[in-house]
Length: 420
Length: 169
Image (cartoon, rainbow over all chains, first blue to last red; front, side, top):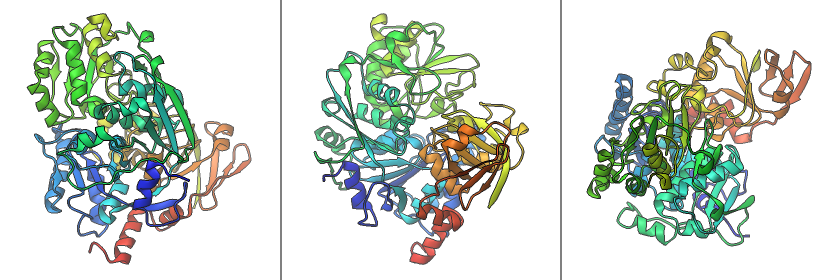
């Protein structure tokens, strides 16, 4: 019987030939990373372990992105720990402010995570890199400390659910809408402990930026990771980026899946996930008219150049509603610079939007756009839990950059057609 | 180990943002995190609960962010054990790694009431509800995980592996 891409990657990294779904293996890790929230605990435990060095200085990443640039003194202390650890242990891939970006956008962009890799990150959205055909899983700080010391991770081999997307995408429907729709169909634990493999004609024609968005949110269905087979689009993206050789794996036609779910995208409208779970996605036609106070365009989910281009297309020559704060956060410095070169930043500022240096900031209620009691935001981020972006009595509606941009103009949740 | 404590019952999909809101993640000090545990769900929870109390919850407990601060906050607040219909996978790993006792059981959750007293034999996976006299046997964890736990958690496992393999020294 054939194998899935996940099975091939894990077989190549496993310490055993007894490779069966449900078995626990130890897998060699190709790249490991943490951020300013998760690294401090990992560093403490790493130092206590007795390890004298990290398993590979080139394969560890430290990215201050959550509360960085430092939002307060305590955050500054946490970021300082990363910097000092990187210096002490000669870790090459430490990204200082001015060079950094949101980890899940930055690491693929820099060619540090690659197809066929086992990637372990101390952040739940590590699954984003699955879009490159890597097996990328989020873990906690203690697990990350163990990986930094041993260069391996214990894991249970998960089953895979295959999603096949077919049909013609409607106007303004993006990777964000596909993943929100998918989560709404299977629920926030619909893929718990499992791999979500995204496939089909629609995925084959989807850009890398949209693929990253889809894999990013696999965790919001509880998945161990999301994954997409590498193809020409992937290889094109990696040209000039990949920092080391890599191996492309594909799923065999006779591979075994726990379940196969087929989705006809021609029936899907742009989606809006209502508070307080990502599974509460509804078509835009059922969300129109909800008044908003803030619109956020950014994050590891939707802060890439294509996201900014779409937002600019809608905001060009328009004005942000007088009662709305529009905050746009490019995910990395390179994306920011590209947006400046393309004139997108000028469009945003002329429209009355605020543009920020890269940070996770408001997505997790850190800073740079916190909601007051009773306030409501439309956001291109990934979670709308209670209190996620600020006050426990505030609300977050999740959507694509197109919907977030149109809503910022309208002052209420709106589709781009309404503001043309 | 025998755990005995009073039940606090929570709904399904308790996420890590609710367990410990991100606005407190500028520290990893367990004592400080414990002060804000479950704050956005029930602002009085930490004041009302007693050391050793048990959380019982619906499916997908601990979904969302990978923050280890979530199980750390629960443990430091004095929660002795969490029994849920299911756990989100990163929370599951984190709880095991930091030594917070967890069990999966649909029956225990469905058949208990807030305030019930449970007695749990963690080694045998036997849960007794002393308030309604029901006894449950839960599935034990896979052998490797049991080995990690009995050895003192993942941190101890790593220390031993470094010594055993004579690597990284």
